[in-house]
Every structure is written in C-alpha cells, then in structure tokens.
Image (cartoon, each protein chain N blue to C red):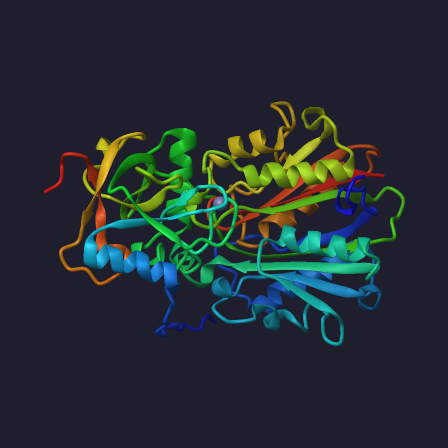
Length: 136
Length: 313
Ligand SMILES: [Zn+2]
C-alpha cells in the first residue's frame, strides 16, 4: 500500500548583505552587480559575499552588463530556455532565462538584460535576456 | 616530502555486497528494501552482525521526504548501539568515508548502505529545492536544466539526452581491514566538490572528477590510466556524460566501460555509485593484479565526484 502525502510549508531565506544589495539594485536601479575580489580581481556575477574562484571574502560591488555573451543554453521541457551569460565586466556567468525562440540561440550570441515592469527585489526582476538590439 | 594524504593508504577489502533489483516502483518500504540488501551483503561477505564494527549510510532527506532519513534505516542496517555515520551524497562517498575509517584504524569492518526511492516524488521537481534559494530556485532551475547546459557545451544539443531510468533500490557493501586471499581491495580513493553555482564552474569539463581521479591514482600508484584498468564503472546518467568521464579520468578509448550493463537501463538516486563499486570489485575478483575504477557522482551536472581504485589480490 502506498500512502499519499504532501509537504507544503512556507520558508524564509536570508538573501544576506551582498545578496540584498544585488536584489535592491535590480529593483530600484535596473542595474546588475558583480562582486570584485580584492585578492585575485575576479568579478563574480551574480554577486555573492565570497569570490567564486579563490573564496576570499568580497565586499566590493561593481556594475556589470547589462549585455554579454551566451556561454551555453538549453531548453527544459515545460520551463523554457535557460542560458549561462557572461556579462560584460564579469568573469563568471549568470544563469537566467533566454527569451525568444530556441533556434535563435547560439553560443557566443550577444544578449542584453530585459527588466520586469513590476519589480520585487528578486532574481525575476530580470525578465530574461534577449538578442542585443531586440529590446522592446 | 609528500603530505600524508598522498601516501599509499592501507588496503581495504571489499568483502562482499548485494543490491536489490531496480524497479520503477518498489511497493516495499525503505527499511524492507534496505533489509534485503544488508542481509544479502552480510551473507555474500560471510560475516555476522557482531563482526560489523560501524556503519556508514548514504541518503538524502529531500529525496526521502523526511528529515534525517538515516533514522528510517537505523535498525535494519544494524546501527542500534553501534557507531553510525550518515553521508548526504552518493553511496560512493559513503564507501570512501568507510575506507578512511578503516585506514585510520578506527574500525576493522564497516558496512556501507545506500538507498534511494525515485518513485516517491517527481525527481526533477525535487532537485529544484537543492538549488540556491536566492538566485536559482525562483527561476525554476533544476538538475535537468544544469545537465542541459552541460550537454549543450559537449554535444551542441538544444536539450539534454534521455536520463538513465530512475527507480527504487538499495545497495550494501561490507569493507574490512582483514583481506581474505583472492579478495578485491581498494588501493586508492579520491573525492572532490566543484562550485554549486553553475556559472562559477567550467561546465565543459568534469574537472572535479579529474582531481578526484588524480588523488586516487596517486594513492594506488596508477601511472598510466589509459592502460591500468581492466574495467571502468562510471556513474553516467546522461549520454553526454560518458565523454566527460573518459576525458576526466584519462582512461583512454580501450578501457571497457560498464561491461556488466551500467546505469542507463535502471538505477536509483544515491545508490548508483555504491553499485559501481560492487560491479568493479566483481569484475576483477580472482584475477590477481587486475585493476578496476569505480565512480560515483552527485549534485547538479556532477558537482560532486568520488572515485575508488579496486585491485584483485
Ligand atoms: Zn578571488
């Protein structure tokens, strides 16, 4: 016999100091921030409180993008097209939605961020990335 | 001077093991499945409960729908009134932990048990909850999406290929410092974690596996991986991962991969790597000097890797 059940409970996640600055910049200024490492100069985007390459603590935030190059892309059935985008000024890639038909996406394509009209200080304040020049 | 971790470790025998048949939905409970694997492993290893000094289990709460999922199997792995360690990763990582316990002299004989029941919930939906809650969960990114990004870099595909059939299963292996003649022994192990955020890593390689294999080769004294192994047993869940595995381990084109069948026709999450260790040991037993490589992987697009080198005595 199989007993059916559902797990459903609200949860609260701390975005942290750096995460909060990143999300507020999306909401209020439509700017994308990277975290610049003082030890190895790597710019990690999205910004986190540590360097993605040498793991030192990072406090220095700089603006990156909003344009960049597609590093990889995939279509997940039922969810849409996702890509890794290396934004101008960043050394690592941000994972986000690619908006538009899947066959137009090629690795290396130039893309730019489109921001949502209603922004709530979340990663979805970026609606997705479109081929540069295709902005509405 | 070489640091201690690079020195050849004490040999640890794979005394025996057993696994349940992988089925899409096993109507038995987790303890019932685990009981079958454990009883089979003790029987195969010709040891009794009292011979087992400690237990290492592998399970993931998220996949079991309860917290501290090792509690569900405490009795059936014989861990009541004994030392138990629980690893929340693939079973191969649990086996490596047990090898270290034995090599350190803490215990003589350790039972390693892994279970996974993919039928309990939509697996890919569950993996969303294993992703970063600030930057990835709100986008709906799951392990399938990250595997798809990796497949795009390897195979230039729009979508990831068909995943190995995921079902329900359990596996148990007995490891020991006492090495019967003819037994397969673990002569080297390696283990590595890459960054969690997919854009922080170079997804075009399994560099974590390269480092894990390198550590295992150094311990086992493997100088030329292209000719060292009679068999390799990889934990590849998607078609594009086989190329990543061969490149990262440098086993070359001539080493047979999973002659016993591999994972594509059926495997259970968390259990895969431990079944590879058992398959590798069985493939070389009775052929002194022959070596096999066993591999386990976990997390999005192979974030974690564990490797064991098995050698027949
Ligand atoms: Zn750094």
